[in-house]
Length: 566
Ligand SMILES: *[C@@H]1O[C@H](CO)[C@@H](O)[C@H](O)[C@H]1NC(C)=O
Ligand SMILES: *[C@@H]1O[C@H](CO)[C@@H](O)[C@H](O)[C@H]1NC(C)=O
Ligand SMILES: *[C@@H]1O[C@H](CO)[C@@H](O)[C@H](O)[C@H]1NC(C)=O
Ligand SMILES: *[C@@H]1O[C@H](CO)[C@@H](O)[C@H](O)[C@H]1NC(C)=O
Image (cartoon, rainbow, N blue to C red):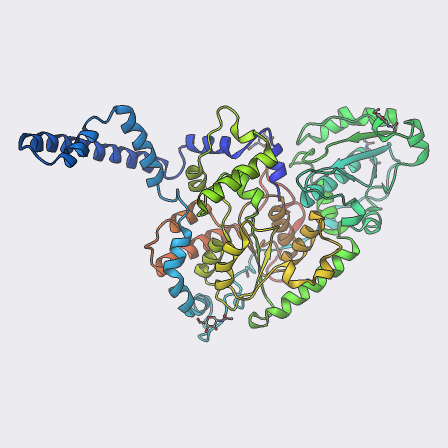
C-alpha cells in the first residue's frame, strides 16, 4: 500500500534500487562472480577447441556448415565475449528468473497428495498422532516471554496545561500513512501543549480517495478517548479563523524535515505557535523522529491502539466479515490465515520485475509505469535489472508462489485463507493456482455482498480498512512485500497477542532459490520452506531498535513483560 510513499521517496525507482543492489556485494554475489569467471573460462576453452576444429576441418576440406560455425566462434571479439559472459552470468545466477509456474506444474501432484504435511508438522510439535491442521496446533505459543500492553500505566498526566494554540496538520498517503500522521500529530500536540484540530486528509492521485477523517475513523471516540491527554477539536474556532481572513491557507505552514526531533518542534514551531495562535504543518507524514522520550512513545501507542478506531459503518461490516471468516474455518477451530498480497498492477510495474507473461506483460508494465510515474524509469542512468531485483528479494510474490510457500510450510488444503489485496494483476491467471492449493480462499468480495460493499467502492482507504480489520484477528498473518499496511498490522498484532506478531515474513532472497529449480523434489522444497518459516518465527517477538518504528515494534515502550503466564 505504499507505492506512493516509495515513489515520492527522493526519486527512488526500482531502476536505481536495482543498480544499488547490483553494486552491493550481497549474499551470493561472490559466488556469482566466481560462476561468471567459470563461464568465461568455458567460453574461451570452447573458442580454442572450435578454432582447432576449423583448422583441422579446413585441412581435410571439411563440411562448409561446420566451418562457418567454427569461424563465427573463432572471430568472436573480446567485447562480444564480454557481453555474452555478462548475459550468461546474469541468467545463470540462481534466483534470477521467474520459473515458479514450472516448479508448480511439476510439483502439483505431490502437493495434492501430500495429506501428511500437516500431521507431520503437528506431530513434531505435540505427541498427538491423529491428523490435525497446522493451524490447530499453533506454534505461536511462547509462555516464557509474555508481554502485555501497559500504556495506561506509562501515561500519567494529572490535568491538562493551558493550550499554547492550535496545531493543524495534513495527512497524506494511504490509510496507514494517514494513521501514522495522526498518531505523530497527537504526540507533537502534546509536546507543544497545543490543541489539535482533527487532521485533514490530502487528496492523493494514486489512492484517489476523497474520504475525510470522519469517514474512516470514529471522530467522537477519538476526541473523547484523548481528552485527558491532548485537546482535540473538530474545527478551528471562528475567532481564530477570523484572524487569518477566514482562509486556512493564510495560516503559516511550518515546513518540517522528515523525522524531526522534539527539540526542533520546541525551538522552531513553539515560538510561532505562541505568537500566531495557530500553525499548520503540511504535508505531515514521518515528521517526528522514531526515537522520542518514552512518554511520547506511549502516547503514540495510545492513539494508535485505543483512540483510533474505524468509523461505525466500517466497524460493523468488518465485524460481520470476521464472523463469516471464523464460520468458514470450522475445520481448523475457527482459526484462519490472512495474506497481504501485493500483486496489483501498480506494485508489479513499480518493482520492475519480470514474470511469465512475455511480451504482453512487458507492454502492460511499460504502460503502467508511464501512466503513474511518467518518464521516471527512463531517466538517464536508470538501469532496470529484473534479475538482480529478483535475486535481491525485491519482487512481489505471485499468488502461486504464496500458495506453494504455505503448502510447503505445512498448511494443508483445510486451511482457510483470507486474501487482503487491491485488484490482482492478471487475476484469472494468477489466482487459479492459489485457489487450487487452498480451496477455502476468501477475499472481501467473496465475504461481503455487493450491496454491503457498495458504499466503500471507489474509496481505497475504506476498503483497506476492511482488509486491515479481517487480518488483525487472524491466527497467522503473511506479508509478502513490506509497506505501511503490514508494518502497522505486525505492531498491532504484537500489541494484541502477548508481544508476538504471529506473522510470516519470508526471506525472499532464500525463497527465489527454491522457486528457481524446476527439478526440485517436494520433500526438499518443504524443508526449505520450513527453514524459512522457522527464521521468520524467530523474529515474531522482537524489541524496537533505535531506528525502528514504534508502530511496528511496540515493545518495550508500550508493553511490559509479565512473569510467566498470565
Ligand atoms: C484436500 O485434499 C485431499 C487429498 O488430496 C482431498 O481428498 C480433499 O478433497 C481436499 N479438500 C478440499 C476441501 O478440497
Ligand atoms: C506543557 O505543560 C507541561 C505541564 O504543565 C509543562 O511542564 C511544559 O513545560 C509545557 N510545555 C510547553 C511547551 O508549554
Ligand atoms: C486563501 O489564501 C491563499 C494564499 O494566501 C490564496 O491563494 C487564496 O486565493 C485564498 N482563498 C480565498 C478563498 O480567499
Ligand atoms: C537512524 O536514522 C537517522 C535519520 O534517518 C540516520 O541519520 C541515522 O544514521 C540512522 N541510524 C542508524 C543506526 O541506522
